[in-house]
Image (cartoon, rainbow, N blue to C red; front, side):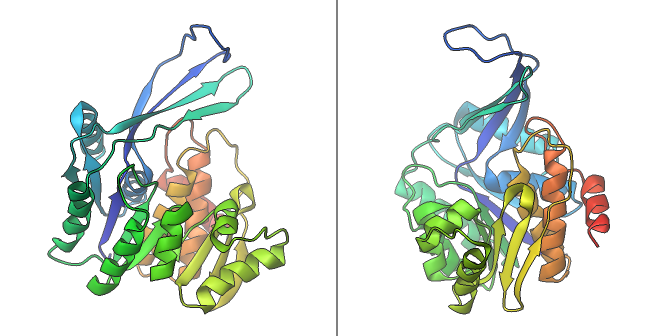
Length: 308
């Protein structure tokens, strides 16, 4: 299996719990609390581990909450390389309302990074003795990191001979695409923002994705459509993959599980088409679990086999 490195610039400790009803200005007595290491790239690394793959999780880490983050990753045997920062690692909160089944997600901003700290993250990639075949960068950029950070990462990946898989949004995504990326996984909303168009029809969505490929800004574009599955645009053309029908318990981590499924499949030498199919199966496997739980390998492989 080819080496995978994940990068998380704005990781988090994800706390999840439940309450019968959500009311304003009341003390809400919650049920048991679950804590998980979180943030896009970290969730991808955790899901890769669950899917039987191997990766190294690079992540910015600081303060007492950063120590907890390290410990949570150690509990799951996820190989990691923390990048020390002065600020405290953020904490996010997910609350499930038992009476309605609604889910409330509170996502914090994250610590402010100095130029030395975000430069240290790029240096950590350069310092890898063996350049990874795949670099997976996922999640938001913290305050202080420049908008073109992922663009710099794309340039570095190309110089090192690594393929960059990127899952982010907004100006950070635009800067990376302008530099050139192996694969991006925008949602439909994020694709609209990237190409500055409404994309009201399926034909327009497919054309926009293919335009990114034909201009050689991306080798592959995987557009997430939620329960409807994904659009894959590549040099082979356009293909849509429907998501398996499963009981939805939580949507937290579904996109990260999809990226993990794609990454681990490519690292195992599968075709891009089969890698995306397995990614869709892994994403569906994630929503079957409650709270901040990610996918399970048995579920992902079963759903993948059923999609053939």
